[in-house]
Amino acid sequence: MEAIPAGEVVTAGKFLVNQCDALVLFYSGASHSFVSLDFVSKHNLKAITLDKGSYCISAAGNDISTNQVVLGATLEIGDRQFLADLVVLPGMGIDVILGMKWMSGNGVLIDTTTRVVMLRDPNTKEAFLVQLPRDIHIRSTVNALTSRAIKDIRVVCVSSRMYSLMIYPGFLQIGMWSSKLN
Image 1 (tube, rainbow, N blue to C red):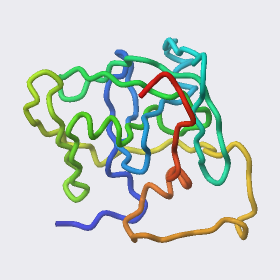
Image 2 (image 1 turned 30 degrees about the vertical axis):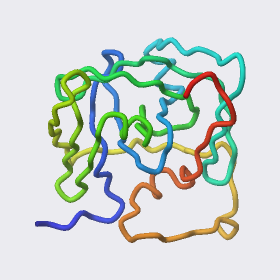
Image 3 (image 1 turned 90 degrees about the vertical axis):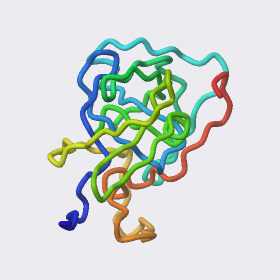
Image 4 (image 1 turned 60 degrees about the horizontal axis):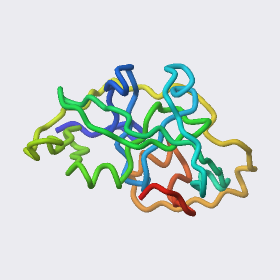
C-alpha cells in the first residue's frame, strides 16, 4: 500500500448539499458541523438567526462568534439523503465541515489509509461504504480573520498524520455558549 503524502486531504469528497455541488470534509476535530458563508450566499441557502445564544468558535487563536445556522440542510452521500444543521462561518476554504456530533449520529467510521468512509443509512441503519477521491484540492484561502506573527503561534504535534491541522489550524476548540439547538 502506498504512503499518503504529508498534508494531503484524505477525508474530503464532493457531495450534494441542498442539491448543490459541495466540497465536504469529514473532520473529527470539530464538535459541530459548519457551512461557509460563501457557500450559503452563492447558493441562497436559508440561514436563520438564533434569537438567544450564539456559537463561539476558537480558530487559529481567534474567537469567532456566530448566531447563523442553516437548519435541516440535505446532504446526498452514496445515493442517500441525510440532514444536518450547519453553523455558518466566514472565511472557510471548504464548503461544509461535518463534525463529530453529525458523524456519531450517522455511524461514521473513517479509514484514512484506504480513504473509505462507512456511514449508516438514515432510514434502515444499514452500513454502506463511500470511497473518497484522491484528487481533492482545497482552494487557497485565508482561514483566519486576523493574523499573528509566526513566532507567536504555539505548535503542538500530536501525530505526524495530523493533516487537518494544516488545513484548519486551531479548529480544535469548538464549543457552544448557548442556543435553542442541541
